[in-house]
Amino acid sequence: MYSRQSKCCAFQSSRTAKPAVFKRSLRHRSRQLIQVCESMVEPKTRKREVAALSEAMAEHGLKNGMIITRNEDEVIKVDNGKIEVLPAWRFLLNLPEI
Image 1: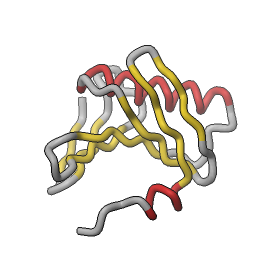
Image 2 (image 1 turned 120 degrees about the horizontal axis):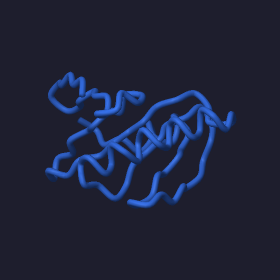
Image 3 (image 1 turned 45 degrees about the vertical axis):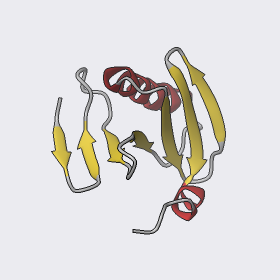
Image 4 (image 1 turned 30 degrees about the horizontal axis):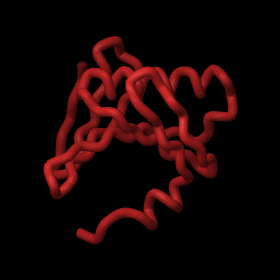
């Protein structure tokens, strides 16, 4: 597992070297896993991104994850919880002020 960390975010790959996932620590001590990709229209890309985030969720014991895309918006149910897919603009509008 590769990991790099700053004050609020960590960048890491999973134990099986799937695409990297960002781990964000929130003010109230909870954590959030975020995967970023331009589009999940291609089935192969969708499968890869969902598998990477789902695996990271299991490793960290989290029930929710997020995939930020250019313009897709949906909720994907996975074995260990749910993944919210949302466009980058919506994600940015919902960020708390620092």
